Amino acid sequence: MPEEHLAKAWRLLDSGDNEAAQAEFARAVTEEPKDIEAMIGLSKALARLGRYDEALETLEVALALDPGEAKAHYGAGWIYYQKKKWREAELHIQQAVALAPDVAKYRLMAAECARRRRDMETALLHLEAANRTDPAVFDGRARWTLAYFRIFAGAEKLGLLMGWATLATIYACTFSVASLRWWFLAASLPFLAASGWNFR
Image (cartoon, rainbow, N blue to C red; front, top):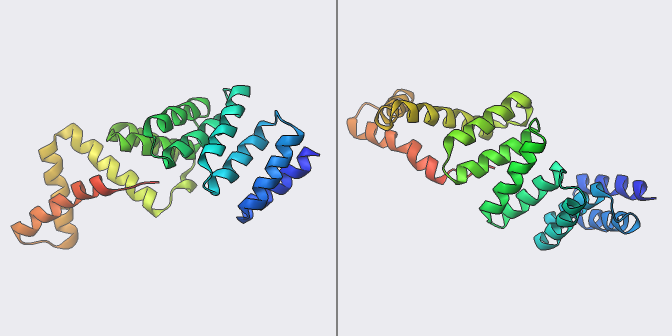
């Protein structure tokens, strides 16, 4: 029965045995070719094995059967992101968010896509929505990013120079920077971080 293979496949995937999970999901898809859940599981196992093209082909079949399947759009977006195809990734993630706006991990990925375009305002909106929906998805790094985006959103509204001075003052107070030279160095840190930050 496909249900038996699916249950076993998800257990294997959760345990990290991706090869065995891929085999079980493939068996379930063979037995029931229109099983969307099995296709999504198969694509996830394939992606974990680094077989991105096969995973995308599987998701394309799933989306052809059900274009309104948010999990399939999210999976495709995640894979395109790993392949550094940012535009395709964002299109699928936007679809996932439109179909399931209350799923926090979709919002987090949408925030990352917006960050890639340097659209801090949109990224902040997605992060805020994710935080409201499920605060448990936020680890320390994600919370720091949310706070950081809030500062920059405020800085954009007040004007770049005022935001720059505010951030510099925060850093100066935090690290007890007395020298003007170090004050300027502290002011540059947020901008350096913004260019190198890789929020996942």
